[in-house]
Length: 130
Image (cartoon, rainbow, N blue to C red):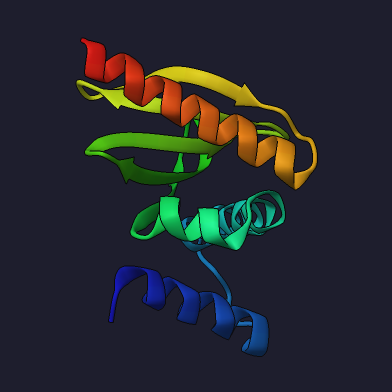
């Protein structure tokens, strides 16, 4: 059983049976909820074909500084899309740090997706010139 599945089971037991959550489990439940909210947000903002292209495979997680995040790779470059508040932020991971690329507009699906893809394309072009 994966660690994530064990957490989901613990939270489900809490929902169904009222099993109390310790402080760590309560914080983890909040983080899981934030990640799930972010996944729902992404579903509403990015077309399924683009999501498959970018986020398979990917790693969804919680970052204390950035909130809910998804890490994905394009041409061996690591990108992080973070949702710390009401806006999405795109980062390029460089030498263990996160280089901010853009704060994406919270507009309709097409505008959001277009901005995301252009930022990724621009970043890849810049890194290939270096």
